[in-house]
Image (cartoon, rainbow, N blue to C red; front, side, top):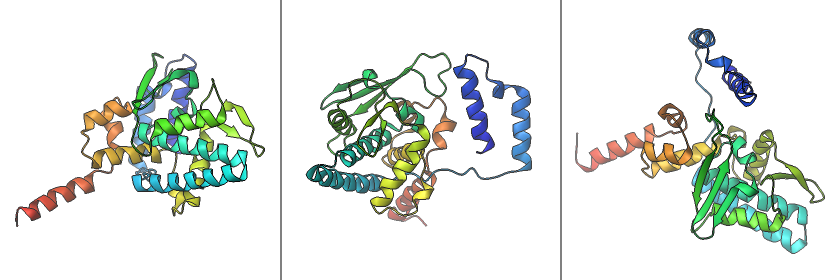
Length: 260
């Protein structure tokens, strides 16, 4: 585990236990900057999941759900419906893995045809436990709201964690999915859908994918930050690979205008 992730885990534990965050102390910050200076390295980032890849995976999942229903395979039907909801809610809401696994049915409000509101009692950076509500719109296709409702209907869940493990006999676990289980789930369905190099994708690929989609569709940084829930611009910039597309638009504009 990289040092930055270890520090983040240490900070999260102290905050959750009501203790001061030791990683914010001047001594720790100074040591960390010294390590970065001695051992500079480019931060490894997850590959963003593109919208056409989301469509491809959803198409495979829909086809697989139909086959499972025809064969009466309850376990596969549940698994594929769950995975579809995980993918679409995670992508369109720009959730991190830990946020997806902490969603609870009783804290989700649905207005069919309009959208859904998900409440999380604590999010990254919420040090005072005020909680945050996230709105997600209903869409004409690849709809996260309909995918969520389909999962709730098929699973017959009424309360507790939204996304849970499913055993080989089709029994749904009483506890929420572990965050570490999300990457294998996503990589497995992506591979089955024919996406290559799945090892380059991680739990951050959904958020990075949405951020890049929004950026390429000309969302300004303020709107994107408000939607995803980023508190500072540095957090947002780390998720966006916008420099190349921005340069391309500027160059193409210059070419059209006949600039030399």
